[in-house]
Image 1 (cartoon, rainbow, N blue to C red):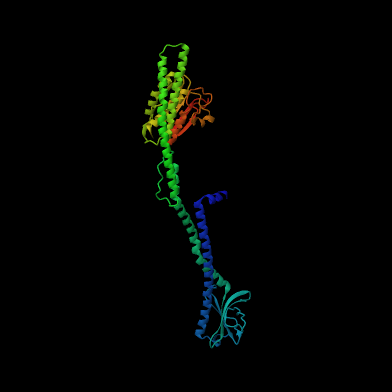
Image 2 (tube, rainbow, N blue to C red):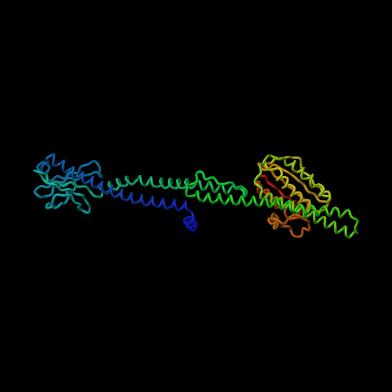
Length: 448
């Protein structure tokens, strides 16, 4: 009932369908009852006409009392169509007829006309008529038989309503559904869009009543697009303005390193240079994340996964060698995925960079690719501490770092990976690389 009340309150389509069905059912009920009563009465009129026609036929054939004095006749081949004919002579009802039935006990003084009378606990419809130059005649039918015939005839007249009303209700439901189908199609189109697909909604085949709403949505999309363009310009300007001073700091630190200084000063200068480098790295990742989030969907083309792996390893090999980490590709199998090569390279590079940074010295990082059914599975596995299951949802948030890792990083690597995967419609999962010891991390990216 709660669901019905909710749909009745909030669903326009349900309310229209319901009220149309109620209206059709009410009109059909009234029309059916009227048709039943009318057909029932008309059948009784026709039955009365049968009695009149029998009486007229007797008058026209000049049947006299001397020929059939006191006779009691039953005409008709079936019980349902039986018509009883009784003659009166000298104001005395006729004797029993040929079927052995007792005559109707009609009072002789009853005037001519048509009546409903009870005889022996049974009801009869009786027509009395005085034949010119002859006896009086009574033509009768049992009302029970008449009512059965009239009811059957009335039900036959109502039968089309009983058949057509359910069909009409189904047709109404389908018509309402079809009228609302453009709105459902529009909702599906909007729901399937990505966050950066801001082109206007088509108003073709949209009902006139909904077009103002669609127009308002298009205006909102235009304003959002303008705002995102402003954001893109701000990101480009910020990249230039922030990189320039960091580059200047780095150059000044390089010049200062060539100047003779005490061991304590050299140590502090090394810390300064590492801080500048961390700032540049964090700035690059932050700008990469902002660019991915605000950039429109790029044209995808088949890209070799092994080719991307090799490019990433070339860039990150110095970092791996500095920590004496064995990093490489597990197998030589290749697969091609439909994606933008730069985005795929950024995704893999962040995964491998994270693995190298969080793997202890002398550890191992492996890259692999496998084709499973209709999907391609990319995996980066390391021998680091891993990520507890309770933390695996949070690590995709910007700037979030697992407590106790004691590793340098910006907290943006997995956030960038997740953002790219969501844009491409891929699925990212985290596991322990060694489930038995709850250690190591295996990040899989399933290309759907």
